[in-house]
Length: 122
Length: 139
Ligand SMILES: Nc1ncnc2c1ncn2[C@@H]1O[C@H](COP(=O)(O)OP(=O)(O)OP(=O)(O)O)[C@@H](O)[C@H]1O
Ligand SMILES: [Mg+2]
Image 1 (cartoon, protein in one colour):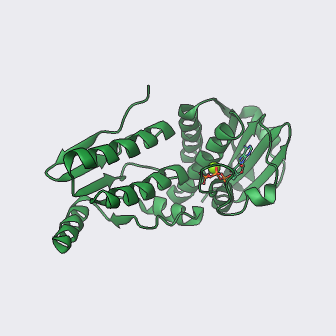
Image 2 (tube, rainbow over the protein chains, first blue to last red):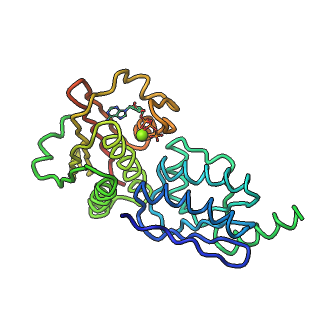
Image 3 (cartoon, rainbow over the protein chains, first blue to last red):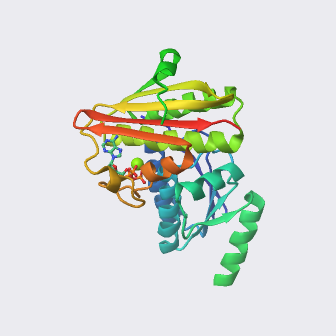
């Protein structure tokens, strides 16, 4: 069995901090876990911290995009934070647009953005 | 693409039979790239390309072998990586290299994107299998 990426609940936010080089199975499990946890916890926001990720390929990119859409349908905004500059440059050249994925420079800004978004919705 | 086959005599090798082997293969490529002093952006592009090609090899080629070596040419050094599988081959290579075309449920970006991310890119494919060779020059 492969490891799972932990999903932490902090108030009405779910925080995922990816700390290991992801196997495809872990990526798929994370997508399932996140959807389930959003529903179970009634979370209003999800933050995915990818600052430790050395690469984001099409598989991880697709998970980030899919998760953004799913969470929106479930009433939560997802913010991807901490993308390394080299990763961002590579994603563009790979051809991944990450449409619909909100990003922020770091965790602090991501939290601010979430607060602003939920204030706008209330 | 030039023939770098001789470099593979001293290559590092990872056999890919499952998705954790794809992780090992890209770690092997990253380690070589780091040791060669390649810039972080170039390393990231190379390792991302290796991840795409390693996954394709597993998903469509039924697994295979990844070999990587440091090469030098005209005073510059680079990393050469070969992905070899004994799968069914790619039926229509032009189509497969088109952005967005997938025979499965992917995004159809792996092959075309990997090609953009490296300096040299070469595919041999047929009913006996597929070999993709890439080179990323250092800087
Ligand atoms: N090693 C291989 N053996 C056989 N067919 C392959 C191989 N690699 C790629 N292909 C074929 O080429 C197509 C395009 O590959 P590509 O990596 O661009 O897209 P994908 O794997 O379908 O999606 P993505 O990589 O974006 O998740 C694949 O759908 C598959 O049909
Ligand atoms: Mg692919």
